[in-house]
Image (cartoon, rainbow, N blue to C red; front, side, top):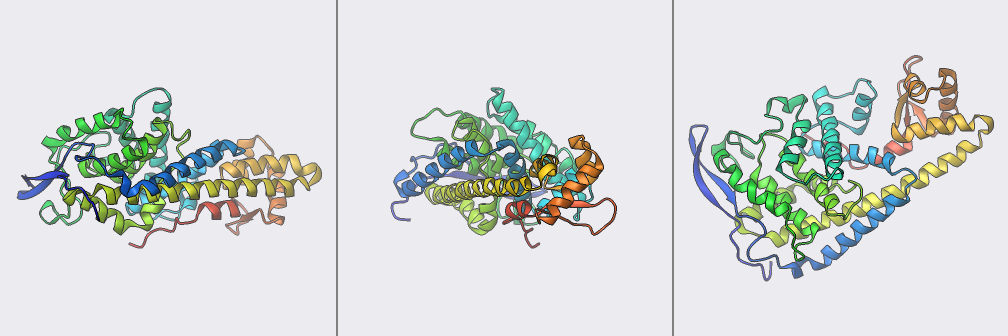
Length: 391
């Protein structure tokens, strides 16, 4: 890249892992030296900043921001876990949360559900005034790995052994993060950077730098990728750029995995922070623009379906109650909806049958008992881009 500053992004040190000598990497503290050449990515920074502002504004216009967040967070949890190799679908997660049987291994779905819990915890703590800190990251990690495949990987604790990325052992790995005895020497300045009060380092840039640094330090035995992606949204919420945790990069990173991993390595090997920031900000801009458009589409869809339901006459009030529930849970059973809404089974059955007649919902099982109904268009809209990655 023309004008690329020459900088040292870190250093390799020799250590022993698994009985063999390996070269582990120690990142230089943030911010980079020399400072970022913002002129190289100023155009995409302005676009990303504008897209974030527009997305934050759209959420205030939604008829029910909590309902949108409920589903959008689940989509992000799914995508983030898919990058790590799970095969769940959005329907699998919703079936799991409705106490129905998913179509994939249970550990896959539990992993996604834990992600939702970790984000909820992090946002609740930030709103209570707790700072974004190493302690909060450990708390979230404990929830992220509390059950499923990661339960045996020291949930909530920084690693005490060497990990690596790629390869079958440290000796043939693509990348070896800092040794465990050097971990806190990297994490302490990282935590200070999270709290940096510097007008020349706006939150969007700080989030982009922090994500790479966290992934490079790789402080946990498992879950670093998912927590590192959550870190971006938490930083923007803490800084006040977003009122709700509604920006997620996993769909962009899933679609550009090769570029993502290549640019992480280039930062480590040659200090190409500007190339990374251009990629990161492009992801922020595209993701924010897509999320704002999705919110607008959902708002229009809900209103259109409400208008159709109003034509049901005396049945309309009860059907609208079931429709409101479907906005929160796009897959429901008659028994589950009746219990949650404190309505009779015949009333719920009639409401769902009326909506089936208008093709607002469809029945998915073909059974006479224990039937499941899905809010088809809603789920299809949210399902965009969530096809599991090929193994």
